[in-house]
Length: 239
Image (cartoon, rainbow, N blue to C red; front, side, top):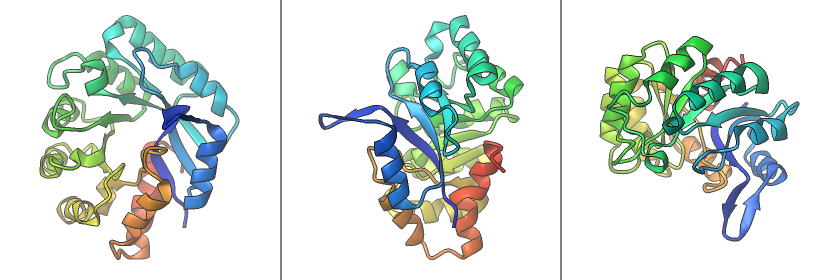
């Protein structure tokens, strides 16, 4: 079965090592992952151009720009150039790292640009700046933009993530770093398999372990296909 990963970080520093392209590919091979959405390390101003150049021509990787909206028009211009000229396929937002207030209009210019460019948005979720209900409010304001909620509010805000996804049908919950099958099963019961997408959050999480979490759910082959690749493939126009 094909597996697409919605979130892997390239050149991520961890335990005295920087995980480059070869390291990531080895992790993907071990887990049987065919394609992955890759993002740069989270800095004040992530180097999205360098990311795009590193994976250019490699069919296994879809580069996703991680952009700090606090740079205003510069952020909007970067996203447009990244998509139209660099081959970037989506936007990643890190509210806690960049101080993004999702319930305000701070991110609206970037969301409008995503709607114009036809690209999905991945948003980190947690109990603070990335609260699932704030993501829900943002997604509801931009119904034409697919919003992938990383970590589905894991671990203390899974129920809020599910409620946000019920409210905003353009939200998809990602399994990134969610290691208990119970939480994913809860989301499937409430929303259906069509609203869940597989992601590992590598290299912080070993992809093979995240794959095993999905396998432990005891889903049908058709249900696994939707989580592992069909829905993400549609959102990123891979198929």
